[in-house]
Each structure stands twice: as structure tokens, then as C-alpha cells.
Length: 170
Image 1 (cartoon, rainbow, N blue to C red):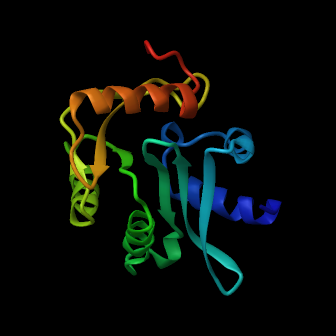
Image 2: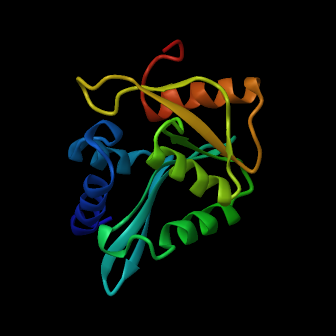
């Protein structure tokens, strides 16, 4: 990926997520060398207007971020990107969401539910994406079905060790 493409993606990420929900520029760029990680850009007129940031593991796929440029939000592009991604997958797809305790968090959960995701009832804590940030209590959503407690535990261990680089006992 060219630096200019990464810069466009990171600008969309900064416009779409609070600091606690994204990595630093250097931290995000470093992920490009990880064989399990990939960025899937949506390009229009030579400009990146949306992207998926995903992790591919033997057991499941994990969507770390999906974001659409603020100038084209509300056009259905996010749903189209996610639908295409899950349609090409033979493995379960997981993603993290804020617990549906606010209006915006509830709308986000409903967006993914309409795409076929299920909100799992297990407690889940996202380790910090940046040094000095606190843990973030989230919920895990899964496609095409809810996770068993045993599967959730295995997936959480993989996420903690491969994505967040923390001990399994975190």
C-alpha cells in the first residue's frame, strides 16, 4: 500500500473513531507488515472513500474497523462493504461494538443485526489500542450465529494475543 493511500485511510479513521478506539498513526501503519491483517479500501475517482480493516485467522475473521468518509456517509456504502465481506467468507466474522446503552451504540448494533450479526452476551474487555489508554468494555457480535462460551473464549484468546498483543490471561 502506498503512503498516500494509507494516509487517506487513517484520515477517515480519525474522522470516524474517538482516540480510544483507534491506534496511533505509527501503530496502525505497523500493522501492514502483519500477515493476518489487511486493509480493504473502497475507491471512487482515485480517492479512498471507505475501508475495512480486517484480521484473517484460520478459525474466524475479525473486523477491527469499518469506516466511511464523512462526506459520503448515509449512502449505504458501509452496509454494502460489510455485506460483500461476509458474503465471501466461509468462516465466522466477528466484530466489537459498544454495549447498546446509548442511542448511537444501539443504532450501531441494529445496523450490524440487519446485516445478520448476533450480539453475544459475554463480557468482553478490549485492551488499549494506545499506550496510556484505559481498557474499553465492549460486546462481541458474530456472523452468522451467536458464539458458544467455549468458542468465544478461544476467539478472545486469539484476539488478545494476535491483535492486541497482550497475555491470554488479560
